[in-house]
Image (tube, rainbow, N blue to C red):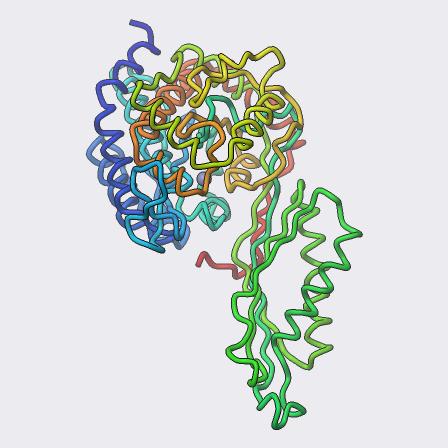
Length: 479
Ligand SMILES: [Zn+2]
């Protein structure tokens, strides 16, 4: 048996454990930094498998690093396990929450953590039996939905000695993620912060002249940001909500708060927009005779692809073969599609056609579920919208990422439909599939020094040897 065959056989034999972990995390959805069940479950299973676990790293009780082996190279697999608010849902194709308003795994991170677990137990098994040298790690990275886990772990230096990192994300197709040419980036860097203004309460009709409105400071801040928008890079995205705008119209609000996201294709663009918004905040406070505080939550980098790793992952995806779904899975997917407007399936299929290599047939993409691994177009195509905290890792070490089909084409992540799929056999199969692909690439990195060196050479060329600088201001704490 080849190395790859042994790893695949091991994962098939342990698919029950991978599924049980994914199911248990799905049944106990926890929000970012509160993933006590998930982190304990994963860490416990890793300890049972022979890994040593450092729990509560980087000032986050639910962040951990599990390690096995010694010496170089050091390969890290990333795992996530946080849920999203309000997305509770039964395994049903009609909207039906388990508990109204409760969290749910609408981004499939229950699968993410379980799949990555499957990878490391298989790789460790092979390394142990064949005396392969090196250190294998699983990073338990909490609060991805808040963009908090990895940047704080990065600031703590936890990724610094990695030779490469491999990761995945549940999605509606089997492909690589961050399909850029060497040196290019995708997705958006981000700053997340809250602004709190404090004024003075007063009777809004009786003696408004004594009041100073914190809400008006927020309104002026928002107005200032709208006027700034014309003069920043057009790809930037700034969005905000007012989390506290006062209690009643007849009381001048003494306190008000807004939560802002700034996103842009490059970290330094976010930095300069942030500095401008800081000035607007100061101006709003001056105009309203209020005071302010900025609560910095997190800062993320854009995603730096690594084509050497992506090509290897694609090759291994093709070796693993199709992610096969049963007739039951397909029937569930078809039912699920009916819950979204028909244009969505069409739009997504067309969208994917711009992301996958020309000539990919509709049959290869699949009718409702993508089973075949797809080859992407390389370059900056349609991959610029969201953000991921994998970006920070990608500027510290060569990072490769795949996506695996966990939900039907046309169904978006962060939806109740996605929660349903993440708890179903469709989702569980994607975790096992991702475990396999990532295991093959990890083993390649441990056993083929030339491959690892090529990935590192590309990384050094792309970053110009520039060291990662944390986007977090001094004193920022994960919360
Ligand atoms: Zn996610």
